[in-house]
Structures are given as structure tokens and as C-alpha cells.
Image (cartoon, rainbow, N blue to C red; front, side):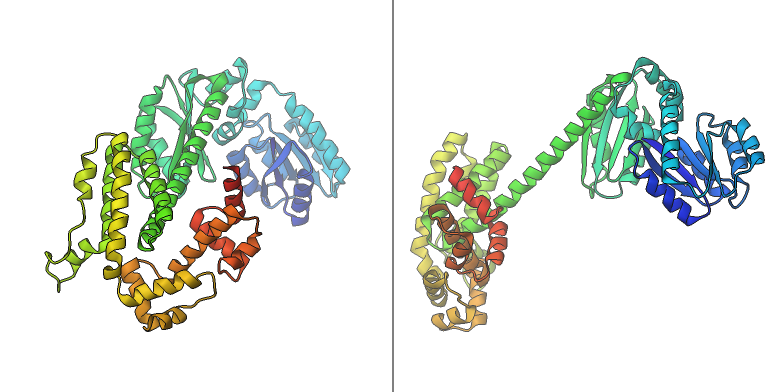
Length: 496
């Protein structure tokens, strides 16, 4: 698109021209100026393709502005406007190459006709003239993304003083303060390379000119990004290309960046799912829900070994088994934190998870060991649960299991357990590592999952049948717990 600067000290004229420009497909407004000083400043900064300028503006008049910049920007198109048609002004405008002379007010048809004429004139320029006017920002935001012929590329190479006919593009997507960070990276890379860059929004594009080794550049870039530990930065690097094919390097860099960002997002979602799965697994151990516990355990360890190497995965599973043993028996918690109990009084767990897991040599050995060990933990928990849980908590759990699909409150459960609501709340936190509300909600969500998978009930019916009084709130909580809406969950199950 061709860039247009409007210079006029009357706001209605500025607004009118801007409005008419928006109706065109090939012109875009680059700026507005209300005085000769602003006009000169913006012309030098933006190098617009077309300037509409009033003659009578504060400071020197419009013709003097044109005379001042005409030699430096000989290809720039100027259109004069004034409230009165004067022959003497037209005479002064001719030597300056003014394209047209408009008398205000300017009708829309006249304005658009003039733009059509300017469009034809701009398109008729030689490739070299267009390239000579480009700024770095214009080049990196637009023309580098298009294939160029040899003549056009040579003009651009001269324009930006590229030392080589080859170059490589890389892109950065930076969450916080992208301009400052991009400037720092560009300055450091410029110590070794000829490098230009531009930043728009949170994304920066860099062009490194020369015979660049991609692996070396990536290593240097990673080192520079490592200096930004508090920021989220994604990058993409294209291949080394000749100048006329730099658009291919741009496309490669963008695709690389998007893949990296999507992979990172997927990994974060996987981590969130793992955290949710772990919390639900620990709660299911406490509720003697063997089928649910086995499913959650399998989902958790598959996720761990899918994302980590075998050694790190084993370490994570050793930590998990230690937590599960403690959830079932309180052995580690009692020995470490209970000063009133001698460390030898608590019965030891049936096995040492760290010692046994870390000795496993491969995934086949892990799978053979894990199933048996998990059943041991579950049996151990069932044996010790009665003695381990205080009687009021056991009563509360039994009451909840019978009534969780109803509108039960903590106070009602506390009454059934013959304790105060505050004391019962403390028991949930201490022994089940969760709150009363989360415990009941987890049961309801599991029941809702079962109803979605095994019945043809509507989402509204399932919400009420699971103990939720508000279907919208049910959908929100369901998504938070499972990572998907009830409808999506149902479609996934049906598809499977």
C-alpha cells in the first residue's frame, strides 16, 4: 500500500481526507500534520509516497515546504490544496513538480479521481525508485515477504548497504518490552553481523546479511535469550537464502516460531493435566475407589514417561509412591512432624519406593513392577484407613458418599459426624489434603463423567443429577476439573 501524509491546520479537512482514504484499497494514512514544522518532521521520518498539503499553514507555507524537501525526495508526490484558486500559486508549484492543485472544499469524486491518477503514476515508477524510498520498517514489514526480481533486489541491497547477496531471517515473539529487548539483541549481534530489525506489537523480525551459519546463529541467539529469564520469548529461524528469495526465509522463520509456541502451549497444558491428575489420584486413594485410582495412576505415569526420559521419570514416580504411602498411612508425616510420637512407633510401609523404582532398568520392568506395587499401596491403605482416619472423618466420608448428589452443606455433614463444622473442616485439610467443598465437588464431577459417558441425559439433567444447582456453574467447574466442557467430554468419549 502507498503511504499518505495529510498537512492542514483545519481538523474537518484532516478528518474528511482520512475518511475518504479509508475507502481505497491501495492508500493508507501514515500521519497528519497541522503546521509546516510537523510536516517537515514527518516527511523526513516517514518518507510517505503522497502528501496532501494546504498552502496556508502555520509557519512557512506549503510551497516552501515542498521546495525544502523536493531535492531529497524527488519521487514523492505532492498535491496542493487551498481555499482560493490563484494563478500565481500554480505558477510557483509547476517547477516543484506538484502533481495536482485542489480548491477546497474538495468533493469526494474529485478526491478519489486524483488518487486514481496518483496510483497510476506510482505504479509506473521503476523498481529502483521504489526501493530507494523504503525505510527499514517498510522493507521488513512488507517487501521482504515478496519475491523480488534481480534488479529490485540490487537496488535494495544498495539502499540498506547489505554486504552480501545472501541473508537469513529470524523472528522473536516477546511478551514484555519487546522493543527494548530486540534492540539489545540487535546491538549485540551487530558486533559480528550486519543486522537490521523491526518490531511491531510483540513480534520482531531480524535480517542478518552474509554467509551465516544457522547453527552458530541459533546458539548465539539462545545465549542472548537466556539473559532474559523473566520473559517469555519464542523464536524462529529461516534458512540462508539469496536476496530475491528472502521471502522463503521469512516464511520458514514464522512457521518455526509458531510450531515452537504451539509445542510450548501443549506442554503447559500437559503439565496442568498432570497436576490435576495427581491431585485426583491422591484423593481417590483415600476413598477406596480402586477402579478410579487405577485409571488415574495409569494416566499419570503414562504422562510422566511421555514427557521425560526414563531416569527423570523414575525419580518422579518414586516421589509419587512416597506421597501415596504417606497419604494412606501417614508414616512419613508422623515420623517427621509429630514430636509426641517416637519415630519407631509407626509401622513401616511395605516397601521402599525410592530403592525399588530407581533399580528398574527399562519400561518393561517399570510396568511389571508398578501394577503390583500400586495394588500393595491400595491394600495397605484399606487396612490402615480405619485406624488412620479419626472416627468423625470416617463418619463424614460415609455420609458424603451417600448424599453427595444432594445439596449437602458442611454443617449437615458435621452434624452427622457429631463434630463442629470448623473441626470437620480441619480434619479434611489435615488427613485428605483438601477442603470439604473440593472433596464433594470431585465426587460430583466423577459422577457427572460417568453419566456423560453412559447415558443420553442432557447437560442440564446431568448437572442436577450430580448435585449442582446451576448448570452454568457446573459447566465451569467441569471444565476446570477435566480441561474440557461437558459437551466436548461427551464427544470425546463417544468418538473413543
